[in-house]
Amino acid sequence: MEQQEFDINFSRTFVHTSCLFSQFPQLRFGFSTRQNGISPEPYGMNLSFSVGDSETNVQRNRELFFERLNIPLEKLAIQKQIHSNYVRKISTPGIYEQTDAMYTQEKNIFLCVTVADCMPIFLFDCKENIVAVVHSGWRGCVNEILRTTIVHLLNEHSIDEKNIFCYIGPSAGKCCYEIESDVASNFSEQFLTKRNEHKFLLDMQSFARDELLQCGVPFQHIEISNACTIHQKEFFHSYRRDGTLSGRMMGVLGII
Image (cartoon, rainbow, N blue to C red):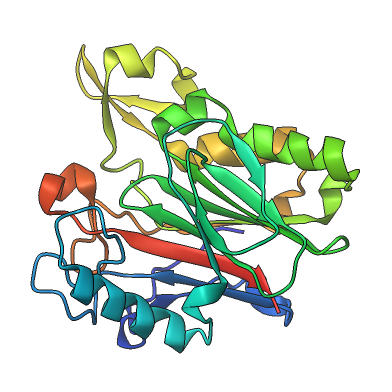
């Protein structure tokens, strides 16, 4: 289920949502943009304390974003991402070091993933009421963090993969995500577009979709945003585009 059109109207509420997840009233989900924050440009709605923005501004941006979703800040579980394939089970809110995927069965714990080009991936098992968030750039793809997360859930909780729903949020798209030949050598040609002898464009979203399908997730349970964080400067932060002047977005998923 791929979003056919990027809807700019969500910018008025500065929350990007998922059609797929909207059918489940027990879920609370949202993904921030760079718009409507109080930080001076180029940060705008920056939700990271680690990019040079004022701590006061970041705190207020987080309050604005999570208030709109009716999520208390003290109920957040935020991971410190390191491009690993480490998966962590969460039972309490807090800050979790050195992890790129986490999941919970607990209600009112809201899992966060922070991005500015990498894929924010959100999983929901509708029978066991398990939610998970995954952070995956090209390193995460090579390390198979998404597959590792699903296999972990299958092994540890005996879930049925056919009950998994997945949303892949805004990230660097195949139109703009340029990689060097050494990185490209890790990927099949079907996910690459050659620009010249040393540079390729990577389709991370198709790579992730193939992993999901190989793991047994039904095609109709997969939604992929067609928004490109690099290309759509008005709406999204992008480290590839803006370097050290890039803010960060957050996606959040939890069960109420």
